[in-house]
Structure formats: structure tokens, C-alpha cells
View 1 (cartoon, rainbow, N blue to C red):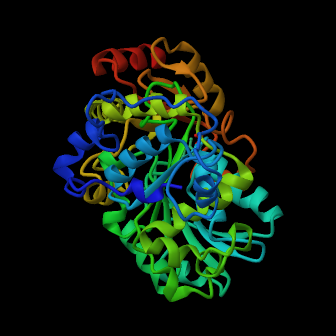
View 2: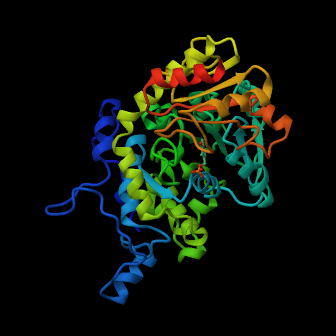
Amino acid sequence: MSTTKQTAPKQGGAKESLNTLCVQAGYQPANGEPRQVPIIQSTTFKYATSESMGQLFDLEASGYFYTRLQNPTNDFVAAKIAALEGGTAAMLTSSGQAASFFALFNICEAGSHIVASSSIYGGTFNLLDVTMRKMGIETTFVSPDATEEEIHAAFRPETRALFGETLANPALSVLDIELFARIAHAHGVPLIVDNTFPTPYGCRPIEWGADIVTHSTTKYMDGHGSAVGGCIVDSGRFPWQEHADKYPGLCQPDDSYHGVTYIERFGQAGAFITKATAQLMRDLGSIQSPQNAYYLNLGLESLHVRMPRHVENGQAVAEFLQAHPAIESVTYPGLPTDRYYALAQKQFGHGGCGVVSCVVKGGRSAAEAFMSRLRLFAIETHVADARSCVLCPSAHTHRQMTELQLAAAGIPAGLVRISCGLEDKADLVADLRQALA
Ligand SMILES: *Cc1c(COP(=O)(O)O)cnc(C)c1O
């Protein structure tokens, strides 16, 4: 295993250096080695002696033995994301869904309880509300705008994590990370934050107190609609040992792994990701393919160049729609009228991403007619891509939710989610204008 390799490089930390980290962090070739991250397209790795491979299985030596658990290409890219987020260790997963599940299941088991913001991605809501419930893991949902007292009241003795989304997809509500972290820590549990929409370019949740950060790298990080993937980053800050009774998986011997105690062997900085790799990847097998990790790295190399354009286009589109008579309302945290404007300015410094929501007057049928007249914005089950696209959550991604659940997640039936790509903002606005005419 080689989680300790994933430690963020020394230049990590300062916001100014993110531009450089996007390009160079994670992979430092030695003399004569490829300049570009190599794709290690191999399921397995060769060892000279039985003993040297045995040490890997005992987690005594660092190295690779089977790509279901770990692959060097993935680790190079995970190390870049750890550096971008300011974490101590990271791992790539096959999807954002796998990242959310692993981040939670790494510290939960049957009988555990989770408190989660109700304003989260539909797939994550389903994972918590249906699938993990079937596994005996209960979730209580709280509004991201609930009072501190209301959020405290959702906690139980069995609560093991507080979960939220920095900038929710598709509701575009902004999580008050400092507040949520304070509440989680008062109950001795970590705050796990899905930071997919702002990316570390827009927000570094660890700096605001989050303990674990997850990503759907499928979105802005890849940025080109090429590869589904996910990532988990550990801040290395949560004191598992102080709450050892709650986290036996980290603080007591793992019988399925020769009695290793992760917190003792790998410390606070490495225990979480090592356990998720050694145990969850081994048993549940949701690794990202090295080829996809390579595509993800290409995306990351320009993240800091692309994100400002996404935000600029999102802002222009939001301002245009807000002034248009056919539009009932616009949600974009970069609009001064938005309820999350101040929080977005504080945490992101801008609107956060290129995704804008609007409610078209006339409900779902008017929204669908509007979408079908668009030329540059394609109707797609995707978001956060170089090419602009649109989607109607109640008709597409969130159609499994009831009206009440939709309302709790802040999703009106006529809502259209608009993902502004990297095209010219004047062309995007012109396309929206003709489709609304
Ligand atoms: C898309 C998305 C996910 C799920 O990611 P996949 O890569 O599609 O599995 C999770 N969280 C957020 C915020 C997302 O936008």
C-alpha cells in the first residue's frame, strides 16, 4: 500500500499556488522518466520474492500488488487533488457515488446514524435515504438553512457523520461550512463535504473546518465529459482516537486485515484513506480505471484556467435571465439578490460555478418548450462540462423524488438547470434570448 506517498507536497496550502498545483502537483518524474503522468494499464505487479509480496499484504511495506485496491496512475492524480484541497491523503473512486458511499461507509455500519443536509445531489439523497437505510444506516435530513439548535437536535448517540454539499447540485444552496463543522465537532463526529461544484479552485472546505472532502470528478475536474470518477480527500485533522468508541473500524484491530489497527499504524493523517483502500476497495472494488485517471489529470491541468470562465459565463447568464420577463426566478449565488450571496462571497469569492437555475413562467411544459428551442445548450444528463447544457431536474435526474422531497431539496417542477460551458458568453446569452422569445 502506498497511502503515505499521497501526502500533499510542500508547496500546498496557499491559495496563490493552486494554479501551479493544478499543473504540477502529484507526479514528479525522476531523471529520464516520462514528463506526463504514465498510464499504468496493468492489473498486477511483479515481485522477486514471496516474502516481499507478503509484506504488502501485511501492510508492512509500501507498494502495489493488484489494481482493484491501488494503481500508481490513480495515486499520482489523487495526490494532486489532495494538494489542491490541502489534505493529507486521497483516493480515486470509480464515480462520485462511490466516493460518497465509501467516505460514509468507512466510518458507519448497521446501527449507525448520519445527519445530512437535505439539499444535496439526487443520487446522494437516494444513496442515503434508500440504499444505506437498507443496510441499517439511518439518515436524518436537515435543511442547510436550519438553525444551529435544529441541526443539533438531529444528532443521536449513534451519529457518526455530518454530511453536506458545499454548493448543492441542483438547488445551488451554499453550505455554511464553518457552522456545520462546529456542530459536527461538538458531537465528536467529522464533517464530510461534497465539494464537486466549486472545486478546490472555488472553495477549500478543509480551510473552513471540514474533515473529509468528496468529489464527483466527472464534473468540472474532468471538465470535458470524458470520464466518470470520484475522489475522497482526508484533511488528517479529525481526532479519531479521541472518539475511539465511535470508530472501532479505525481504532480497533481489523480482523479481516491481519489485526492491523489503522490509527496506530498509519496515524491520524493516513488511517482513513488506508482503511478505505485496504478494506472497502478490496471488498467492494470501485476503483477508477488508470485510463480515466489519466483523463482526469488532463482536466485538472487546466482547472484553474477553466473555472474562472465557467463562473464568468454563469454570472452573465444569471444576470440576463434575472432581467427577462419570461423568467419567474433565478438562482445563482453570484447574484446580489440571492439568499446565499454573502456566504458565497465569503467562501468562494464569487458565484462558485457556472451552473445557474431558473424557473420558467408557465411551469414544466414551458420549461420543456424553452429547452427544445435552445441551440448551443444541449439537453443532457450532465453538468459542469466545457459544452453548455440544460436539464429539468423534476423530469430527469430527480424524477424518483416525491413532490414533498423535491420541495425539501428546493426543486420546483418548472426548474431548469443551466450549465454554462466555456463558449463565449455573448453567444450563450443570444441563444437563451432566442429560445425565450
Ligand atoms: C454528479 C454528482 C455526484 C455523483 O457523481 P457521479 O460521478 O455521477 O457518480 C455526487 N455529488 C454531486 C454534487 C454531483 O454533482
